[in-house]
Length: 222
Image 1 (cartoon, helix red, strand yellow):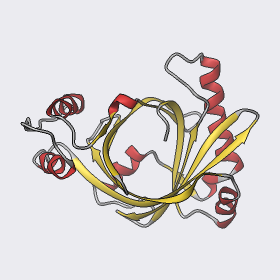
Image 2 (tube, helix red, strand yellow):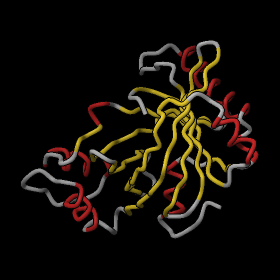
Image 3 (tube, rainbow, N blue to C red):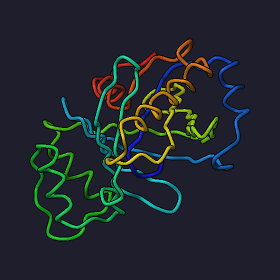
Image 4 (tube, helix red, strand yellow):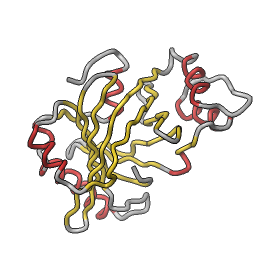
């Protein structure tokens, strides 16, 4: 997803046929399905979504920060910064900064760290952090009306459990300097798409942080 400030809603469960048909009738943002393996770091109480992503052609370490949890509208405001999307391998300085940010202890590496080495380092801190591996196929569509663009991600998750996830994310170009009226309009656009697609009739509202808390304990979302 693009960098910047954005509102997001996500649900998990068994998507009903009518909602799936409505999503698949939307224009595709990307005509290709992407097979993705994400290893998320779960730390109790942490409001940062940290993932190690692998896809055909690359790997990265990416941070995504929760800015606001709007429980009235059941959406969340997140920020993703380009400088916090690190192509692997990463420098020792990145690992030191990550440990400090997350409040965990990691052995300081002496050289660049690839995905396998980083997973080993995190494994040594297993009393502080859990690694949850999520394998999924994802398709991205675009909903647009009156200048309000929203990306619709349909994901079929194979593990840690078989389930379907739909994510909505506004594409209204928000930044941390955007006026409140623009921020509110983007929030309302996400809520509108969720309503028009009738997603809450078959999916339970969970952020990825919520889902990780369940999966890390061996639980199920469905």
